[in-house]
Image 1 (cartoon, rainbow, N blue to C red):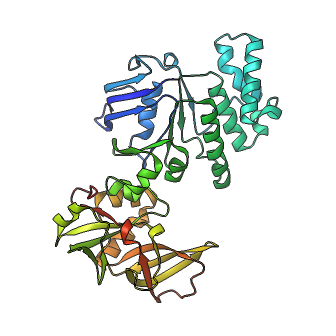
Image 2 (spheres, rainbow, N blue to C red):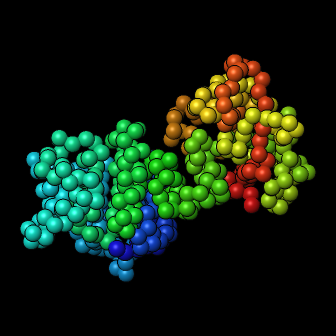
Image 3 (cartoon, one colour):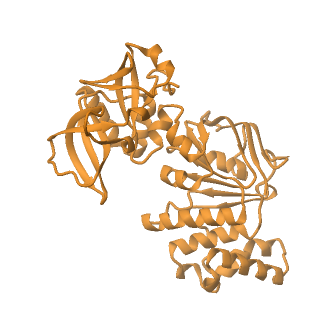
Length: 388
């Protein structure tokens, strides 16, 4: 296996469109790195540049110690797994997996031993004589992975390999791919549009926006310490609540409510009297009790989830309408942008919270939401950067 290093890597198409700009990143030997971001952010372009399927316009890419800018795809020692599997329908599973070895003129006995071993690792042992049409979607994806793994390449590249599977099978295959990757110790770059996929699979996750790297970190740090409004709004399911607030002495005012800010960074004092973006994750918003800090609003709907309920409420506070937040909303659902703009005009914000148990109240009724004020996030409204 080998490390992959991007140094000032860029991609500009002939019409002047810039897909990737000054990309700086090192993927360690044996690491599972996930590229995630909205449509058009440059994640697939970066992957294809490593594979040699896209020309590198600027900078360089190294695989191991070799600069691969000018190498043909077959010279780069990489294997790619696509979202459409790309299996040969007339060949058996065994022949599909062995095809690359056959092209390299590996002796038949060695090929068979390699395929049998990969079949064992992937749980395909009993399926080796079947044709692709006789397999489920998950089984076909494992065959595609087997064809890549059997070559023992320096790097595995996966381009949204689970996007064609149903939700239940995607969850199962996430665990399967993670297990297989760690078992074979393969350096892997994995592209996905699904941030839940990214957070559950990657050793580290690289978040991209408009061709630029926003943050690269392990999943938990991305969740706990987003560097800007874009990462904060993109990472998390359900998404972070983002409200406009005004900084006061040791507190932040959100509409008619005031929350103390005991865990706030010292720099927040520089914003006294100014508006900032305040982030509250649903995980840190709950049913108000005692004298705990709270926000008051109206219940829209409560979704029972067994041990807890996901509460959709509405607060009389302006939402954050930064370019970054609107971009994330647009990528998820074009109608969400219209809803946000309408909410801003009426100075109201949709708000998500997690309440224990069942919420027995009707839509439109008043609701008080307790907030863990030690877990508030603050962002500069002009730059979008986290206030730390």
